[in-house]
Length: 108
Image 1: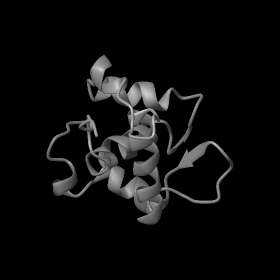
Image 2: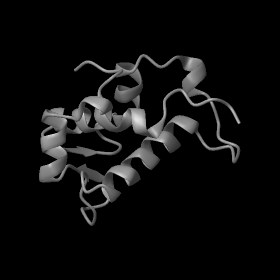
Image 3: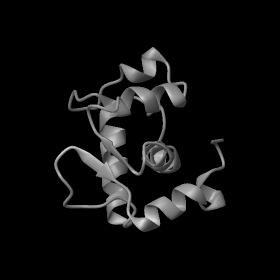
Image 4: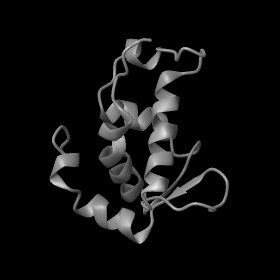
């Protein structure tokens, strides 16, 4: 399998920051989520063109799996309208003051 550009865990804080910077919620498609995150992380074209073993876009899979993990941690709401990613109160709090171990690689 091709090496990932960034792990799901490394994406936790940038994704929280991105959503928080959009008022605490984003529209998955309309807010250019995937493109803006990739730009902010300075991913290369080669990294963005990578595929999973099943032929899916690797970057999209990483972001979607990261979201699922943040939902499981109670930082992004479940049951919201389709295509809307909304931070919980705890998600907003962690976006404002993330644990240091989650911010080692990123500046806001």
